[in-house]
Length: 281
Image (cartoon, rainbow, N blue to C red; front, top):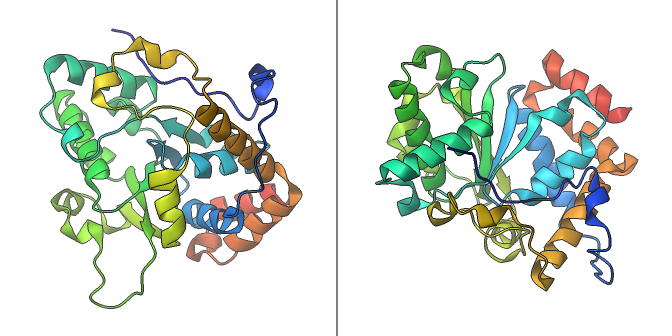
């Protein structure tokens, strides 16, 4: 069985775009400063791991960081994980669906043997109730058992960063991970949250144009997803994504990221200080 994933242009080396964006105009993203702050928080919470941006909701975060980290050792740490496992999409798989899903995940570097590698594997996504993370965790956990992989090692390597809609905090604030039974199987440090303004959270999750259709289970084996889309809405999404990569490359954004990293609790750790130095260069 062959792996299958939706097509997406390489926006760090966008030579393949050709004239695709001719005539498409987009303004500077109104959310750029908020996204930069969110990106710094995600990096600070990453535990020096490999970052997997799940689904499409965090495409803009992936694009900004792809530009900002392009000239650093972290450029190979960023991965898109095209996958929709929201609520019922993550349960009751057929045998064929499970085989295809595992094949796709293995191609993305998430096979059980890969999860035992040196650096943590960190999944990043917009989170409301956490069903996508829960379903992804269940898929990986079952696979680990089926392969008789070392769960005692992997449980210390698997991490999740949820980007949540910002609310006023109080002792009674609802936190998704406190209601997720599976989260108790991991160390407390394995789950972290980064808040984002509610308006932006809704924009990224609900209304932002995307460069590809949602990769739901009905499309996992559809090789048509590997064909690039060229409709007007896709071109608008692509133009916005290109602008974010270019913004990430600018000295201004890189300096801002480096400055924000100094406020992270983990700045005392060597890996984050080295990343900060790379960004300042």
